[in-house]
Amino acid sequence: MLAVTCAALLAAGILAHAQRKRSHQLRALALVELYGPPGAGVTAKPTGAKLLPVAILVNDKWYDAASYDATPRPLALDPGTVYEALANGEPAGFFTVGLARQEKGEWFGVGEWKSRAEIERAEKAAAARREKTRPVADEGPPVLRRPKSGETGPPPHKQEDHPLTVPDKAQPDRPAPASPVTPSASAGASDPDRPTLRRGGGGSQVSATLEPPPVTAPKAAGDHPTLAKRPGGPAFQAAQVFLAVSDPDGTGPTRSYAFPWKAEEERALKAKTIALAEAEVAKYRAARGGAPPAKQTPGKQTPGKRTAKKAAPAVKFENVQVTGYDLALDNNVELVVTATAADVFVTLVARTDLEFTPQKVFAVVTDKDHLDAIPRMELVGPIDADGKGRGELLFRIVGEGSYRYGLYRVLRDGMPELWRSGVYEP
Image 1 (cartoon, rainbow, N blue to C red):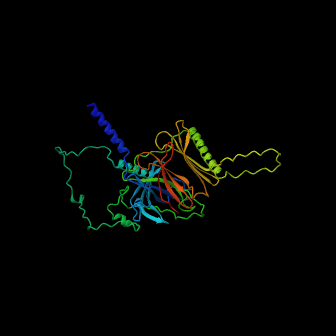
Image 2 (image 1 turned 45 degrees about the vertical axis):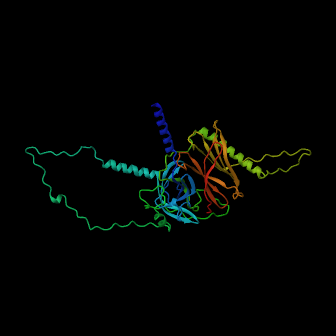
Image 3 (image 1 turned 30 degrees about the vertical axis):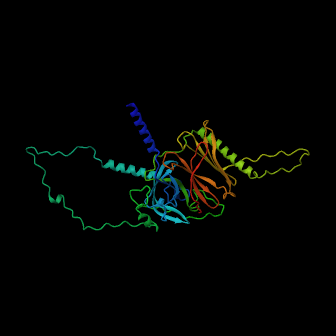
């Protein structure tokens, strides 16, 4: 009996683990970009929005979401598809695709954006209305009572008290105003076997569509705008960029990927990780002939004495960003450094060891003259890509006049690439 009980418990544990780690049959990743006027800040209501499809997971295999099941509109941009936007792993809002568009060969979606704050306010208002209309006390079902002797009953109801209402002549329902669709909309809707991502209750109808700003090309060949500046000009910059997930089985459990470090830990770990990045830049410069020599002070040299070789100047970083994550929920810190030093770009990923010291697991260093051979990497953010609870890192890989996306998993001894998209040429 004991053996049977132990076997049953073991089988139940294995089944529960398999359910937690089961593969998602269909799961799409995208970027939601919200726009506003200059200086509006991230808390202002956006005046424009767009959704960029990135990747789609189908039966444990990754594909480029901008081209998967295209008719020619990709599956990831089917009208009515709902994406949950995540800020560093935590829910930030929902984007519902209303219309798919294509500009310069790049697909994107426009639609309706509802922030987490707006949804919470609407839920509180609905709860307040329910509370206001709720009876004060439940008096139970009505009870019939006969009048006592000497009491007169209520007067009989007259027909005028409850007039009959005659409905108007039945009229056919008015069709909802048709929203503009792409030529491929009917093709996708007519295919009964076409899979669907997460859908909203309202189908493909979107009450209010936010339009993105016009796309402008970079001013010069060497201008490689960042995520926040890529679409639009100086009058329209992305105030917020979110990673988003659309999954018919649900986004899954969400949590913050930010590491909960103390102020002293943060300063120490960031300083050590920046030092690792500086060492990578110094190594890169040395391999390519070193940094420009320092100016010599004119003067007489003593005969017979050799001039001491001057050390290379220290690396001076600009635009330094260091972010700490706990991607595997194991109390180890994954740190990502991105910085520039003159015309050199560096991206370094480190992970703390048993002594809580950051160790390099990945680094890429390049400069503006070698982007065609060694693209620079720009961090997009963390995301539970496959819905199994572990965070991965999405990067934008920027080359000479082109870019692509790459999905990576940070391990103790490396950062293997899980998927890389096709090349985009804005």
